[in-house]
Amino acid sequence: MTDTITLEKLDERGRNLVFTGARTSNTFAPTPVSDEELRDIWELTRWTPTMANTQPLRVVFVRTPEGKERLLRGMAEGNVAKTESAPVTAIVAYDKSWHEQIPTVFPIRPEMRDYFEADEDARHGAGSFSAGLQAGAFILAIRAAGLAAGPMGGYDKETIDKEFFSDSNWTTLMVVNIGHPGENPWFDRLPRVDAETAVAWA
Amino acid sequence: MTDTITLEKLDERGRNLVFTGARTSNTFAPTPVSDEELRDIWELTRWTPTMANTQPLRVVFVRTPEGKERLLRGMAEGNVAKTESAPVTAIVAYDKSWHEQIPTVFPIRPEMRDYFEADEDARHGAGSFSAGLQAGAFILAIRAAGLAAGPMGGYDKETIDKEFFSDSNWTTLMVVNIGHPGENPWFDRLPRVDAETAVAWA
Image (tube, rainbow over all chains, first blue to last red; front, side, top):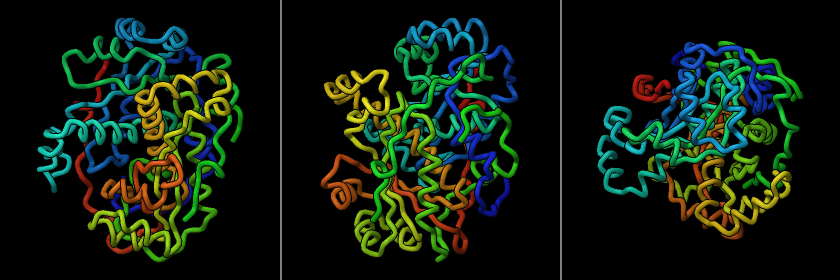
């Protein structure tokens, strides 16, 4: 981390690793993932931007047999085998009380805390949007840390929240397997929306 | 883009450029940004993952004086000068009718289109979440393309939607200045939530 950076294009290897060549992994090798590697994923994620620096994202790295067993209670049937095979599965959550941090993380406008305290809709909207930005960065950070990510939307949110967040204000956004690819890890690549559909010019 | 990739850590230069050293730019130099550079940002973004490959994100690259004038009508006062100075400003939006694409982008379960057609809350929840993941990747893609990003939340959504999306189902999520940093481009770095607060282990 430096205070002034020189802008330049990410090289081909980096583009491929983080953006264009990386794939969602559906099987995992038994190769372990260290806590140090997981901390590195967080270190990369935490510097990426959020609205007013609010950083609502929270992560639970599940890697013990007991933790995995609790998590599997909430996974959709089609996601059980891959979640069992991954050395680590991250529950990507967000803190519904994220606004309590505002005086610390955005000291230039501490009164924003009170605004979001009073307006639950605004609080949920702003919090889930910034958490989404961070969740997108988190997936790319897994790849930048040299690991394969397998993000999943098929789970029962209520069950996972009850298992892991009954004594906190965190709530589940996404579940992501993390590890090294196993046998036949990738599905065929699905079509992307083309630029004619997704990009406009003004 | 290759079909099988070798996992490895992103090198220090890449980490710094995309994650740890990059900063939100608040002033911009007059150095132009080419349409080719903007297409490259989209090319990087579009391969990043979304729920069931649904890709709801849409982008308008605003770089003509007329386009900028319309956009400025919706920007908060504190964001006007920087938006004027940026050679390009992206309106990052999402298509509220994203589910119409399901039979094309997720051909293994075309019936998901009908489920999301019938349930507006589920449609909005899933669409805005996947768009958030893509928006997070979009910011990092700007950096990977060798440019500085200045994401902003201070704008009037209704005004921008009316100016740009009155004949479509797109709706504004975020506005991002794009270019090369000008004079004194960075604010002091704001504190990040520490790992003790944001990361748990199970």
